[in-house]
Length: 260
Image (cartoon, rainbow, N blue to C red):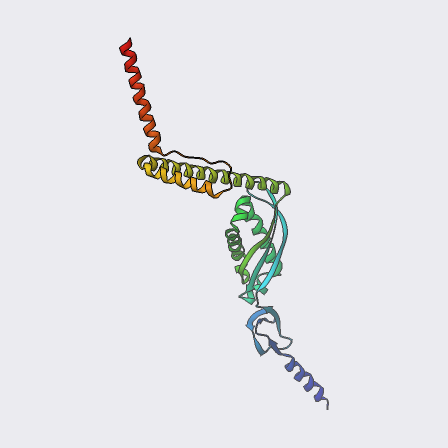
């Protein structure tokens, strides 16, 4: 009878050694304080009172990097926040090499974010976010690799710019748009002048084209409700009148010379 309690205690200890880890979990086993192995997922057994385990989640984790005030390369003070995605690929390192891998990863990301921002101008930060995200990821990945972590992705979410800088950027953008508008208008006027030049050359070489244009203008005037009618003389009449005038001038000059 006295052995029954002892048997039950031993049986309970043996049963307590059975552990279960889910598919996304791993357990780091320490035997008498020393690292033994990584177990899981599924059911396994550890030696009660001898083995200790530290359970690790292997799924992708996120860290929100709160808005931080930092200075760009061109001395503009901005506030930037970001989000980091990472996962554990070596559970034993995440437990043994660093005390709190979540906080350590946060601090490494924060430092890398400030350093990379300080190496770029404001325009580069606003335009080349993908390149900056890649640079931050590379730095953080190098630091966390020895902790058994892999950085999947890091992204800047918001970039807060001072109001004075926002107004200056708005004025700059407005000036650029105005410049572009003037250039487009000047190019349009240049193209129109070139077309007019080509049309004038063509009409000079083909007088009949001018007559067709005059007839078209008369038909256009006739279709509108106008009280004024414009009669266009053919260019041949103008040329003939000019020839007659030149002939009369020559005759008159000849007579004046005879009288003299």
